[in-house]
Length: 235
Image (tube, rainbow, N blue to C red; front, side, top):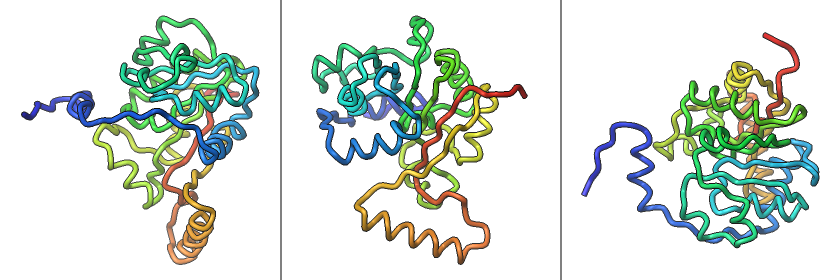
């Protein structure tokens, strides 16, 4: 039986029955990954409050708890994620859209994280979401986004492997979205995955490609992280 697809949200419903969930196991590689992609670039500290949008089965939340953060919240629309996380994490999770959560929650956060989430919103929706998140930030707050890098040929598989992606970003265009929402980019860094040998060989390949290609990207990694902060000066 097929279902009619008339809007982007229908893809979620069509795919829901095919998705499987497993208990998230925090491993050493995940700790290193989150240290590189979040803790150090966002200058996070244990006393801070953290919100994760699209928390899934709680891998990042488990990392936060291990780092000594006690004031953390996860938001996800899928009720089944609760079934695959321990009770001590589940009590930190709210099942809601991010719009509904922000509307009903007056709390402000030091750090807000969207890993592989922001590209699911159209550019206009994304800017509106960033504006809402900005209002939910503490004065020295940061928003951390992880996104496919469309300035790199390696980013195509990440972007177009999911029909629910509604926007494509480069380090340059995420800066445009940030400014439109009253934010600015505090840091932008490449995300590299795989064994140390693969990371090294990819760096070598990228350096070679940079020499050979006249108009290559400044950042070759398939995925990148952008750390946003409240804009220090008006338009």
